[in-house]
Length: 317
Length: 173
Image (cartoon, rainbow over all chains, first blue to last red; front, side):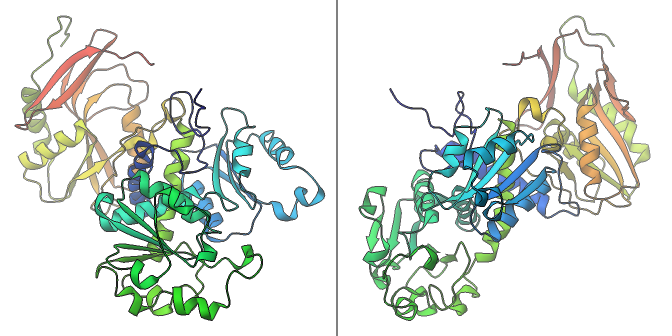
């Protein structure tokens, strides 16, 4: 028996957004197309529409976040939802309440949607499998596993600048091992038909058997960046490093930091992306981060429209 | 007009009647806004026919519908485009069929999120009555009484010609 994708309801519509893995291209494109309409809303005088009026969205962040939490909050408010931000790290959980008890209590307060970030992989799946069928769960990052809205906003940004996925070379550079963003990006890129996805990293920052995800592995930036259309830089995740994966940030920058010189190996019109927060001088040089090929701040802006699209599609299904 | 026999009226004839009714009120301050999809076809034709110079506005009211909770988001929502300053403008809103009035309620709400217009008037190809909200059109191509359970639809051919067709109301799945 084939088990049903836990993100989809019986009619194949999106019920929760937990990971980009296993989502069909039709659903990914539906989200990107819907987000396109929301970009128009964010450019108006009144940046608010009444779609989620009367709905309660709970942001459950068990891990610190600024950009993701804020953009989810802005997205929900622009859809007219009531937004509740719970700083769970300093609330009941630290008093010993289990994750599911926290969720049950919030459901009893008539929650319609949970946006969950957790340091443990699978936390959002666990919540999604326990909530009532009319409650929707969005994974805002779980451990090393997935960060689907970040991947979707990256796909949206790529499509805005490069139009067609089917003739692109995309390189994901840096700490692939600890990166939920990289995993979600790889699934989304391959589903959307990108013919060549490369990962560039030292051996110590690559998960075992990463080739199985359908990517080409490079350990050398000079070879890996040749002819690339899109560069997705990753943050060096010091807080997730256990033991000595790397000699020093300076050493890392020397081999894997993106400088103007290394960028010139890619296509002349290549775009540079980064999910933030930036470690300037570690994975990316300031001149590149602020340079004309950088689309890093567009990613943040598009992130609001993409999260509005995900929330309204879920709420309508 | 009462169409018991299932013969839809000639859309092109109704359109030229509509043009004649709007013509006397047209001046350089008038802005046209069409409601997707049929209303946009009509607004484009009116814009041409009335020789208007201001850019045409387009509304997709999907985000303002009152039945979102029941039917969800339409999968092909397209962006609204209002390429002029709404505040203090005189707007003629254009749609194909006026029925319950709920679409127009949504369209007016959306327009107000762009600004505070000086006035909004409504131009409609066919008013089929059975209103559920207190909304009336100032310019009407024709008033029709339709058999219950029937829907009237506007189409545009590849030559740009408009036509109307009658069919049974789709039952919800």
